[in-house]
Length: 497
Image (cartoon, rainbow, N blue to C red; front, side):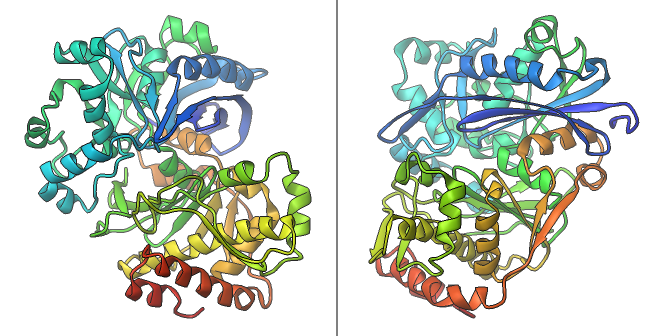
């Protein structure tokens, strides 16, 4: 079933790090309603948590805001995306029994090594490597070190793992729901076998009963119940459909669903997602592949650099004003590797990687310019790494995420990448979820072709790629000098710079 193009509306929900967003979208791609609310989180060392109760509270307010002035009876489907690797444990009644362990929570370093060893052959076959921030190692940590009552309840089979999207879908329907194979990837789901890896889980003493059923994105997993309708303003009975992770959702919103096309999502962190007919294998584990709902694969990776560093390093500044001033420093007098925190996931995996700044900055604006350029340098390095792995990267390249609000940064990224970049009209993961809800059991690519519109194509400025070639090469050398990149990769990454 697909949405009625004339009358039907679909609701897409995106639960991010700092906010929850809701879009109401027509079958032809018109955004007819918007809602949003702020989310808080707690960081303590390697730990990063959110309160699932806040997700639910904000979802109710944001849905009602988005539906204001809209005929809610026209809504034909809802889909939800969340940050990849974020999960909680809940009772069979759907009530959260733990905080949500976030996508970048890195407390499970020891458990990640155990998980990697227990499923070494499977992870190699699937083309990825377990990392401390992935959900399966964090689940193992929780079952070992969580509150005593949580461990006891899990042992009695009373708790289930719920990814962020699963939890909210269950609250909407009034009953636990299946997860999708996109959110399930970092929880260890075997995409080839179509099942949870029972032998691996047995080695780790993780009861398979704690894990949900898994379905294709777009599958109907329930209907909005009376309590969900009262909370959100959605009509009772609206189908709730399995979503995807936020990175995949942004890729759908960009329409980057054909082999060779790529989408760069720049929000708090930088995420790259593309399309390949064959799974892209990465022996170092920086790149992993989701399964495409229409067939084939969605390879990509997530860096720990991103726009989130701007609030940390330049609190209280006006980005629009700083963008204008930063244009005077091309290139900057120094270099910045702008990690949001310690540790990197892509284009290399190194939990000990540290942010750094090199050289002399003429001013704080120059330092700001170096930060913008540093993110762009990492983005270019990521594409070089993907190309070295054998990925096709010569298709369309779209930019999505909150950072696209900065026209200057988009232009800078086109210059550093040395190629045209496309800006979709609705560059939001919530829009991608509306597309998935509209597609239902049908082709997500076909739904995106109907709904996704291009707002602008940004081309490199004359002399732009050449202007940034030398500082990019120095940036790569600085990473290699610290042991983050091997010499062969560093040399390859600088080709043409």
